Image (tube, rainbow, N blue to C red; front, side, top):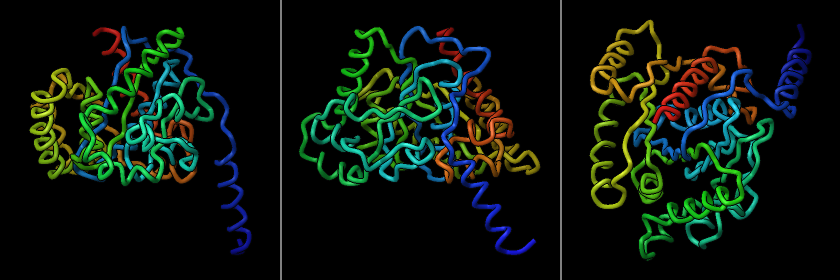
Length: 297
């Protein structure tokens, strides 16, 4: 096959992937939580699958018939990329935090999902931490904006089931705002040694936030990501996590998979990019378990 033919084939494939996807729903709906569950997806170590887990769990929950809002609080905006959300539209999360813009004015619908929405991280968000330094109660700004929005939805008879906040891989003011606004923390742990060190540091920070800002926040969910069952290290890390966090762990390891990595380049989650791939199946199983625990809470 000629180079031109190969390039044409690739362009056609990419074009097909970029087409607007149809509405995706599961035949068996997921159970509805008794109240809105607010998750912060956090791990101060980068590259552990934090954003990937946030958007794919959110997409899977939405496919299960649940109403989900993703708040992208990472200035890199990778969650927006995976969800196909336009970061250039204003206002965004910078305006919510710095200018007190109502959260409802930032919300965008995610194409292909009946009940998935996103509050985007616009490019100005990178300067939010500096802008907030002089603000009173700056750690609780997101919490106030989110609670107001949730109350508006509740009063309109359109209650959200899940809010998932994606954070930057650091413990700066944006992450502290997210942890102050949430009641639950979802921690993705890459199956490598350094990830175990990262979670111990996160636990220390969380204890400080519990004492000073948000006594309700807790680590409720742990996901094993980038799991390669062929390596002894991955299995050893998984065993350590099972031993130390038996109640928090969702024991459905997310495999290291090409499709999961490819999907954002087509502005999709793996749930729509290739729903039959091992990564999508694992995230769907994890989301079902999260929903099951929420219905029993």
